[in-house]
Length: 412
Image 1 (spheres, rainbow, N blue to C red):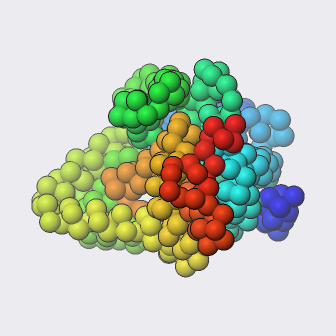
Image 2: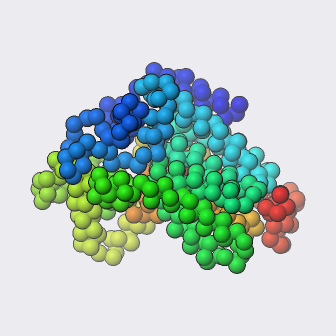
Image 3: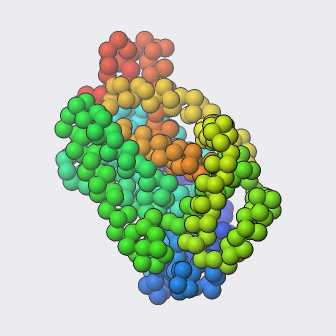
């Protein structure tokens, strides 16, 4: 109820809203209906940017959210409202899943703090990528939470396979989570002795999560000439690293002199297909980085890192709810790795590491950080419970796993 009331209320208040005249939501809606009605993953609009290098209709986005929306369209027709209802349902389900996984891994108090916090999380209620939006972030976050929940449950290989499958679907929904896979492999290798028999579970999650991405690669190579999940990375890379970059996406980037110079050097950009355009942007981005030198690179990357942990958004202003979460999540992460280390904690951490690394590679945007916020909230809950127990004298922090935080074995 705590999760459903504000989300359903938000949905009811914005029921008549339609997809805006441009942007991601319009493309998602077009792709979803093309899939549902024609069975083809391609745009219906004759736009050079939506064509393959051969000039045939195609799509350059990852398929996760369009396939999800297409499934809703098959059931209810071309209804954006129905897809938004499905998003709200998944967001509501993510709240008890986050509570259950935190209770299992960290104990009941942390589960309650995290569950209540996520049920009332303002970004899930009021931002343009909120739970009722027609964007990919709510679906990716719900799949990510479900993946960690599956891994936290009792069981062997079948839970790891389920967790990996859910994580793989999240990767195809939001490619910013892709770096979670090498992080899982690295942790399984680096801490194999501490993980004991659980290192194999982490590797299984990484392997299964990689399968959907690998399965999608031949399609992208055949249609677009690239094996990457999405072909928009070049444009994003240039935006975040050109000589005018400041660590976040400038709202006026289309009118900046840097773009005008790039268009003058590459007049084909205005009519090129998305893969060709992405290659031009990528080469230009690397050239800008080389020209700027190490000092500017260090300054730019530092600014991106600071912005990732800075609770402000150019659209929504001061995000006050993030202040205590960002402040407590670091100590909570350290406590969790010391006292409840295991596959679920590593997977939670990967959901922070991957968007953070993507931010360093490209630029900061609040919707990218949103993917990490369930994990940030969970680790903040760990730290908050630790502080409460120390203040009330109910914890003994002299030995790992005692008092301040229930270990997984104790909870199990």
